[in-house]
Length: 244
Image (cartoon, rainbow, N blue to C red; front, side, top):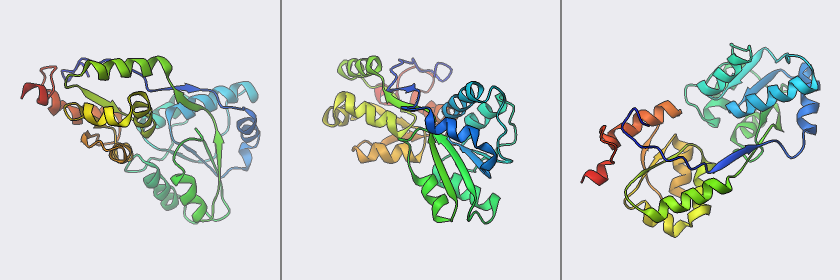
């Protein structure tokens, strides 16, 4: 943000926490040999999976040969753990990942596919895989919860007004923002503020709350979002709306 002329104000909408129970993940770790493919949908999922594997297995886990990641940040997290061969879709979202896996794997009927992630995530990926005949095991590896301190910062930020840009990097950040300030106040705030969305799924969530995204990341990554936001600042540290 600083490199493109912005002045970042950090207000975490969510925080990452361990799963409600380690039981399902522990069971999956001990049964890794029975899986034909593994799919990771976030770097957080990778981190929690491997940290827990170290405690349960006491060694580096042996992942299936068919390994998939939703995007470059997730693939990078896997590489740091020694797994460099994860296959990525051309668009970094659940629908594209499911289609990519089905193309790369061929017939999936009867295949067991492990998906360690947050249970609150969208169900489109496992639903499409199951529709194709795969046995998709969604295992809770972590939870996303509201960040109480961040929520207070969001409220103060909105009360201060002005014409800032607010970045949204997932549908859950949109929902937590709305929960913090209320939908009426949010819509009023975004008459002058700009909502910057990381990708179409997050944009869809914003529109569901009556907020039109000013920009959308392409590709759907933090770096893509930053590049998309650059015209909003023009290197001045103020938004285009403020300069008008």
